[in-house]
Image (tube, rainbow, N blue to C red; front, side):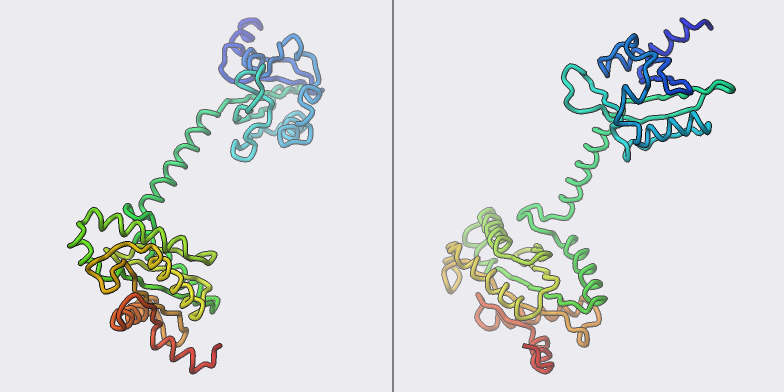
Length: 320
């Protein structure tokens, strides 16, 4: 195979090919490089590689080239760590975003050393990977959120409370839980219809989510007309204040409910906080909040109640 045929073969490749000699002078610069750098081979061949690409002298690419020439060591540069080392563009006349690149460096020759630098455009693969990540994120988000209200669903709650429970037990930190029930919601559906009931639930969820505060506080739809809020790092008294804000946020909506005693949509809320002595698993925390919710309903609804056991333990410990 003669030199011209070999050069034609390199030029026909849809990858960038550069060959440098032991003095780092460019001896081959194929047509792909011309197209993506805007520099013809006639201007590149014979030039010092590091004069053409000064930013690469101390870059991983430059180090790898020196290792290939001096120590006969090949290198494959990870595209995730070195995504766009060369200034290569789809259209060099409009240098906006560099092509994403995978770079391979291979030592050549026995006596006289050369180095082959191969550059592959992986922009399409990177975009596809990014799109797949975005789609995966959307699917995960959809699988963990309630389709009607947009808050976390029961599956997400189960995942979150298990993690929050472990973290709180390990660090002896506060963890509170609110169980929330929309008062007389069956009557609401019977009077206004299920479609209006869905609208009501969306409005209630939105109001409570906006009223919720705390770095890691999350609102969930627990099932039907029941919601819950998980409050890591929030002690009982602060949780009671937050529960009252949520109750008031729904009351402020003033959604008509002719079949309820107050004639507007309201919620009842039960509050419980983790007690290291009383609660050996998070199911007991949920039960304590559920007991408190029952007390709130028994007290006339549209109110907040704390777990009697949690409250008594707090008073016995002298906590302020």
